[in-house]
Amino acid sequence: MKIKIWDLPTRLFHWLLVLCIAFLVFSGKTGNLFDWHQTAGIIVLALVLYRLVWGFFGSSTARFSDFFYSPSKVIAYAKTLFKRDSDRHVGHNPVGGLMVFAMLAVLLFQGVTGLFSTDEILVEGPLYELVDSDTADWLTGLHHSSSEILIPLVVLHILAIIFYRVYKKQNLVKPMITGDAEFPEAKQSEIKIVPAVYGVVLMVVCYLALYFGLPLLAA
Ligand code: HEM
Ligand code: HEM
Image (tube, rainbow, N blue to C red; front, side, top):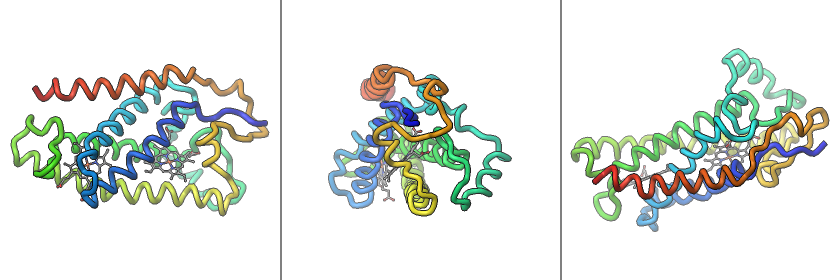
């Protein structure tokens, strides 16, 4: 039975995030197109902000409560990870869910420290003026360090997707593109999909709040 597991806003969030993070890591590490780093960074912060709200009010598979599992459930699932026929989850599995929380936390940290960072040439984060220069240097250092956590996390995330495809013969990417997946035992009526317009409007509102709010905060 083909059912919709990922709503449109969650998919939009994911692929916009991929584009922005690829650009941010490229521009951050090489210095190329660095004048756009701040814009892309604020888009990522807006996406994460949106995702935090969507995690409470979005479609059932996007809700944090749907993929927040007790440590014992995470361990129990982890033990079956190398079984080719381990349980398939409609939504994130317990280990995948943990990975999502980890990525969101690091992205939030990376984005917030970026707001106070400077390269002393082109970019000063919009909240740079709020702190003294020693604190700004410290936060810039943390912005560098957290990218050393973010990049391995993303690599692990992509390796996990490849592992599911090659070893467990499960294609997780297609549902993240089309929204649909085949689940013989699940019913569409068990999944609550919130109309996409709410998610898309929320995303735009989060961006506008940061775009207009951050300069006000710094003034
Ligand atoms: C969450 C999204 C973000 C990601 C993934 C990201 C990523 C990076 C990376 C990988 C670097 C290079 C670090 C290194 O060389 O080790 C960097 C540097 C930098 N980022 Fe971000 N960044 C983000 C958000 C922001 C934001 C919102 C700002 C605000 C303007 C910002 C400002 C800066 C600055 C000024 C530097 C250069 C620091 C220096 O030259 O010492 N970043 N960023
Ligand atoms: C910069 C790189 C990436 C970041 C930061 C990232 C981040 C994330 C996040 C936060 C989620 C959770 C989605 C949600 O519940 O809202 C997710 C899920 C997912 N990502 Fe990525 N991702 C990246 C790259 C990729 C790439 C390149 C692929 C495809 C090869 C991919 C495939 C997926 C899939 C299939 C899921 C759903 C997993 C599941 O079924 O539980 N991601 N990713």
